[in-house]
Image (cartoon, rainbow, N blue to C red):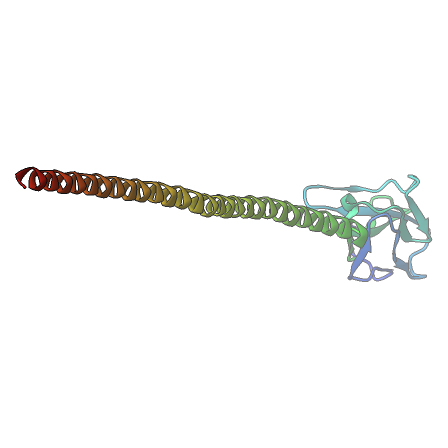
Length: 203
């Protein structure tokens, strides 16, 4: 039966460590407890079990426990316990120390850099698309200006053609008028000559 004993003392505190680091969990045993075998237990969210301190990542310094190369799965509440060599059924357990393993800052920084890269890539893509749209609109406006310029250039040509046509028609009218005048003069002259001939004949 496990019970707390005054000769076994463990600080009730929370120890924070980053991954891949090491941690020392103290366990103080007074001189009142002699001939004891030290054991460690860990309580996690879903289970609890005794640690095998013979594994490479665990080591004992007296009754204190050292854990190397911490992982996130090493988070839990660690209890120091002792078993009397005279009476193995008698066990003593301390108050327990909480260990919280966190991700190192460099891993978080990697995530931040990844997010920043995604944001910058999105901004770059938007800028490229905007530039393409602006170029297309600018080309459209320039094409419109060129079209209007061509229209303006062709208008004087048409106007010049119209003027030439008007001048031709005007010249044709002048020719017709001159021809009419000439014919009229000839007719008048002929009538005058005919009248004179009649006069001479009467005389």
